[in-house]
Image 1 (cartoon, rainbow, N blue to C red):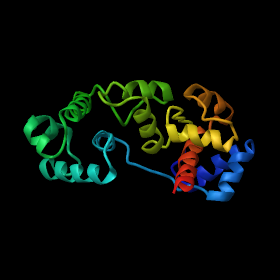
Image 2: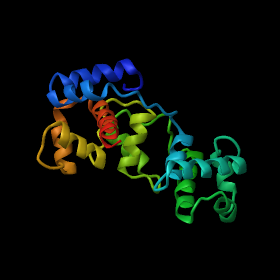
Image 3: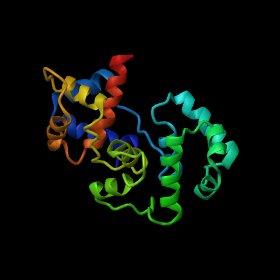
Length: 205
């Protein structure tokens, strides 16, 4: 798990013992804080709401949705609202489709977010059945809401950039190369991703 500071440090120390670049990054930027979200429907709905908009814009839409639907935006209540009601909250037609897909899977029992398969790839396959949730969103959910230790979002641009930097590569590795490079870090790849984002933010800001 990577849901506590101690677990995250232990995993990063294991990687740093193999990779001097990670050891140097920890010395330079410090250990990242765990990022923990509650597992379940609300976190995934928030992910959908936040796609391709700023954090501030997503927060504003979420406040309007909760004002309209109640705390947590229960799936049954969301499905009962029409297009105009949700549009008034700031939810585009496309995102309404995604939100309804999630709500329908949850309310029918076709998707049990509290009993996802233990195998990471099987869990990802379950989550991408939701319209608008691709592999990256599924990986982020499993990493932060379930604290799964070996999730590796190799398609994430910041992760690719930082892996390239930390390993001293001449250019940003491709998604496949990023996945291959991290094989030796199993079962700690989730911590490596969290460190990559942490270090990327430090470097950029």
